[in-house]
Image 1 (tube, rainbow, N blue to C red):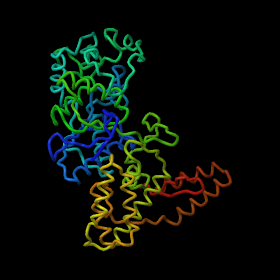
Image 2: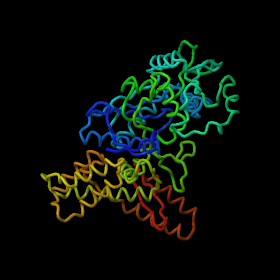
Image 3: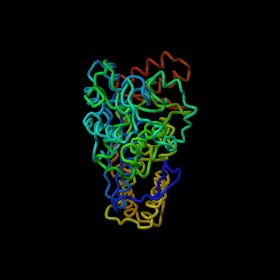
Image 4: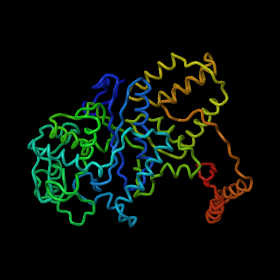
Amino acid sequence: MKIYNTATRQKEEIKPIKEGEIGIYSCGPTVYWNQHIGHMYAYTQWGTLVNFLRYIGYKVKWVMNLTDVGHLVSDGDEGEDKMEKGAKREGVSPWEIAKKYEKQFLESLDLFNIQKPDILCKATEHIEEQIDLAKKIEKNGLTYKTKTGLVFDTNKFPEYAKFANLKLEEMDSGARVKIDEGKKNAWDFLLWVTNQPNHIMKWNSPWGEGFPGWHLECTAMSTKYLGERFDIHTGGIEHIGVHHTNEIAQGFGAFGHQTANYWIHNAWLVLKGGEKMSKSLGNGYTAQQLVEMGYDPLAHKYLVLTSNYRKGLEFSFESLDASQTALNKLRGLINEWPNDGQINKNYRKEFIELMSNDLSTPEALALVWKLVKDEKIRNEDKKATILDFDKVLGLKLDKKIIEEKIPEEIVKLVEKRQEARKNKNWAESDRLREIIKNEGYLVEDLENSCKIKRTK
């Protein structure tokens, strides 16, 4: 299998450290708020990667962190801790916030049929490991202290800028004074933060009472569970310039080498025109909201798989509707076709070749439809082959479809509303929408028509 390695800027064949086994570490969520479908885009892609590696015979150990302390609202060393911000927003403790949104994340994994990582590790449960890692880096002479805490000295790591092609000379020198005037460089980063009397989440350390810098947890936990060298590290493109750059520096500081052999990054799921999906902007739909709107969450997973992880995806409800239609059609055919077929070896070989080329899920889905239309293949063999592919795609293609009829009185209300909209009687249109909503249905307006979805 070949995958695009950000560290080398090229596709490379995956050569596992240990034959037949692959260790993967994925940067997980900061559990201070709901994980919306933009966040889940990444986990859908990485879950598919894990499925495929297992499908072709590898024994995979998948580790993911849950950040429940230390991630400031900026990715640097300034701003409020996200967990404490979430706690203030809802009037509860940071630990209660973490528990609430960890549950929402795990529910989202289930709704999108993404297998849970083999190890899901929390930053707050690995404070000792993070302190030990910082002590190693300090012992190796790559740190200094300021009034704010223990700082990684990037001057001691000559290749600091290489991974992200950073132009350090263009970075804001004023940021050093703003954040910590004791820093030698603006891009030097905190391993352990002290002298924060108002911070709720604090632990004792050799450098004083405080909390770990956000970057420390991933290096500490990935190496604890996968070893000082492991195969694959995944994350979003937003991690390249700061978080993963600093992880690489920490690996060098503690062990004298990079921890992961392959660093792979997903692009983003965005809205029309490239608008960012964001909780703060109120446009970040969750898996749970999609269900409330009447969608099968696996229709969204199907939509995600129509994009390559490195290209990202522009989300719209029109494209989600199209994916729902395609998924239902595929399931309908699967349910109609007889059982006891044989997996077609030629199609399976092509499927593996496509997925082995940098996780080409769009081409793999296209192959599924090519097989559907192939009149030379028996229907029972199509079924067996496609369900075999579904071990990777995770779309539950053998699920039975239950069509729900919209009540006639709701249809009539919607028709009246459409007439009001046509006459630009917006007040009447809004009134009818509310009546329909109170009856448990949502009207989704399209360009020249609308769709009705059950919400309760």
